[in-house]
Length: 251
Length: 308
Image 1: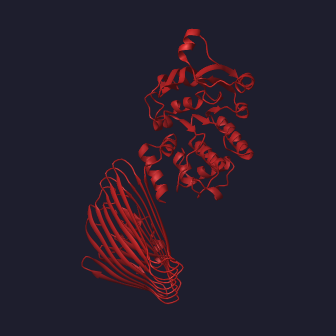
Image 2: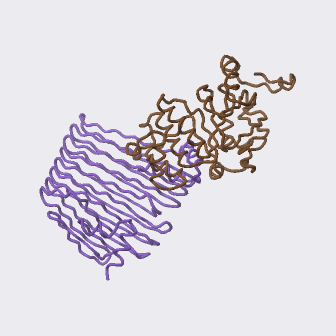
Image 3: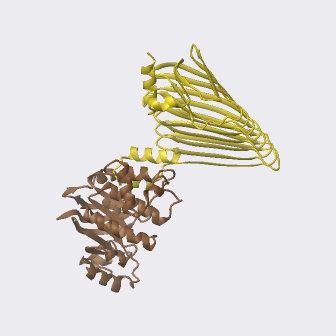
């Protein structure tokens, strides 16, 4: 059963066509991956699903558990159970790690903060009182953001490039957290162009030039991505007029 | 008979009565002294006035008081004037820290006026943290004026915090004179909402050789609130060092003005300043909203972090 359905999604930013009639269904309780080269429109898709400012004026529609969320704000979508982990998490000067996680947590208690920190491999006693600011490394901020997502217990989480800027130990913790999210009933959508992240998914979608090229079993998509997409010099600038003339995709 | 207001005041600042019972403290409601306790070496002489309280606080030479001394200045009525006249003398080599809680939980029209004369003796240490607890809808006019004199090697730090409830009108005027080897840290953190008005003047004169001062002001204003910050540091002695740090966040129609003034009168003195005024970062806002916080809740949390 689809928890989230994207129907004929089109999005232009300035004059550029970023998403071009995208149709995707994300099944409940799966770990999905949306893979594609830089500029394929993967992050834009996640931002549009989250309803971020600048990504809401799109064509088509987005349904969450059968209900259109097109007109909902970011926080309204989050209260339905949708959330997003950023490729580069925000820094919050002066905001304590514990307050940041507690603000996201479904159960507002300190035990939940500690549990979330432990799940991402950070010692609560060392991190609770630190600020979510530049004194933390990129990997630490990524894990703290993931801890806030674990505490939120969302229905659907989109993680944008979860391995970006993190070390080997941190990436293993992040992969463990992804498995835990799945076990706890969260549908996970990994936005990635990294084969090692793609391998963690149960099911994958391949995007290029704002369009869906293929979908299916992760191994099949991974092979195609490694063989065709990674060496491809394609610049991801679609010429929609020529596509219409030729009736094909320019990938 | 005094138990009820005492409990109400302590409850409004989340302090339990038992915490007060054991430690040195003074609790005042309007012009009535509800409770006080001293420890060896600490003298507190409160005197009730028609519209407030005069208090003389003295820490004897060489006495080091480990526990913080709690000062609770409350106004439980909705309207009225509370004038606090403080004379503080920290004698040579003494050490003490005061936690002042100013609470106006039902304020509709309250004036809280404070005048303080503070003298910190040679190599003595004095810390004064003042937290304000205001109602969400009321009008409080807070006008604290303090003149601080630091003797050689004295250490002084003060922090003014008003983050919960409406500011109303606040007009702070603190000045510190620093003798040789002394240090002063003055910090104000205030969050203004609706039509609150904030005016802060903090200044220090670095008169003694190798004296130090840091003036820090972190202010947030939203809705129609306005803030004016005047920080002034004058360094006239060799090897004196000072820094002014003014950070202001604006939201909605809030207006903030920062005027840092630094003046150096000796070639071996050094003073720096930084002032930044900006709005809440959109990525921070979106991150918190993507966790289910409303825009208002997210802005408040970001600002509380910035002001911490």
